[in-house]
Image (tube, rainbow, N blue to C red):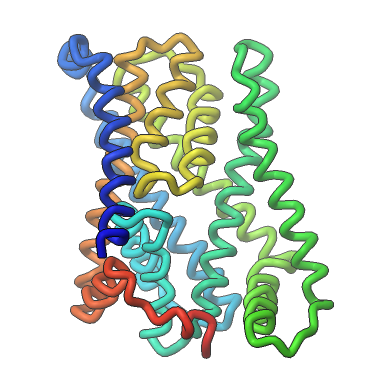
Length: 326
């Protein structure tokens, strides 16, 4: 029991500690900077963030459709909302299990299909944000000196993504009577079914790029809120680095690590520490609050049984042997 609790508590304390340290460093100038903020841009950022969620729902509905799981846009969006809300609380992205259980509970999907749908979503998310980074990087390098690890953190997902798709193409040759290997093969076949044909590649790549552009616009609205003359390319780079760092599930929802990555990137561009910190914190706060509100609404949408699913995930009492079952 202690191990289960400590896994959540320790990662949460790390997240809180990073945010607290960032705010402590600029606390003296914090209120003064907030007083001069342009509030209308805050509302604009919230509205743009809502659009990003609708786009995510559209993409996930497409993925489910490719797996022969016909669902509405509302259902698909609610699925993502509730699982991402859980990810704000539990570490290691265990909240994604909520989505698998909801799909299974709906009666139209197996656990394997649920897991495969998440893999497809995650792969295109990470790959397309890295593509945006690769496109932006040459322009940034022409005017700004950035750490070598920025380039590394962008290149690694591109190489890993390419290797993953090559492996998918090769995976059809895998044959085994072993139950676990057969389950993995089934999952890989489902990933191929949902993503590895021209129409799916076009829709998933295009929609993923659009989602990230809209996500960047949320941050850009926050930048405008503080009237800071930050080039759009720097905002793109900050969101790229922040989300690639957040992809490593060190803290629940990437809280702390995401803000730190954004603030560091803005700092390299000459943004004052207090403003860089506020932009990073408010950007992520907007996105997490919209996630939380959407998650609560999704619980009401699915009904009381979804609360039971959340409790199961929080207690880690999911029957693992059924994860890849029919």
